[in-house]
Image 1 (cartoon, rainbow, N blue to C red):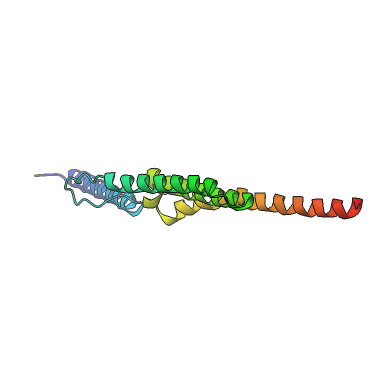
Image 2: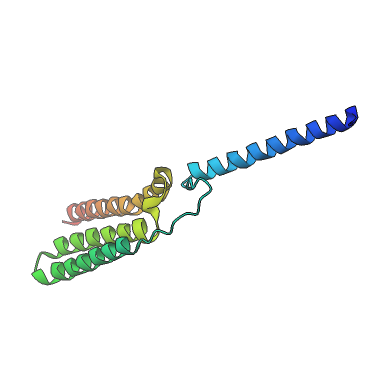
Length: 143
């Protein structure tokens, strides 16, 4: 036979236990919502990304070959520079997406990393335009 106070203690402990279980489930659900996995209590099988890495590595080798080809084909200097920059940016993007695992991340994180990378090239273009305009102005002024 239990007393009324003992029943209240047991009831309070049950409520606390339920709240703790609810918090744990919410934390697990939050983990799943942020790129976690739902394993249903079972062991998570190991998944190798070796073939993916080898494909990216092969693509990087091909891009490097293209860079060498661009240099030795005999194109105009400005064209060579533009193509080399484009190939380098492509290679850097592949490394970031696959070897740094950004391809598996949520879109918001990819944008948070990718968008700021657009500012330096934009700034470079602005500086190039300004240098051309300044040279043109100086040529008119002196000439």
